[in-house]
Length: 111
View 1 (cartoon, one colour):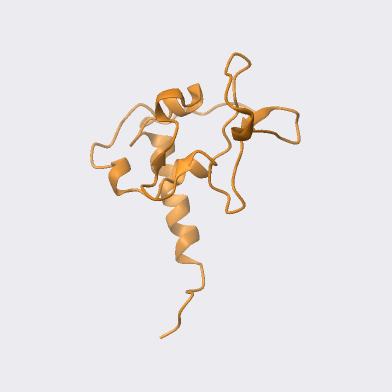
View 2 (cartoon, rainbow, N blue to C red; view 1 turned 90 degrees about the horizontal axis):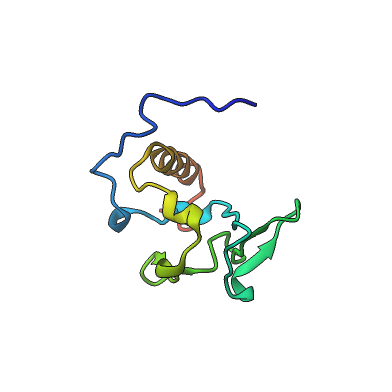
């Protein structure tokens, strides 16, 4: 598998803000680097044997502050989270994918 870079990979859309987002990035798998040490209640081991951020039953990162929809361990968040660029290509793609999936869901209330 080869990595394909798009022209907009380094472009950050200034209109994208975490303040107006459903914390979509907090549903992605976060692989921890070997030198990262987090409290054990925040860490799981995936099917490949890699340390990853634990997720709740709802699929969201366990460190997500659900009341404010922001990271509850922001100052000590994993390096991969620090590298995730708000408004970058990956962020925009994940937001679009989430929006398409959300649009296909059956509403909880009819009428």
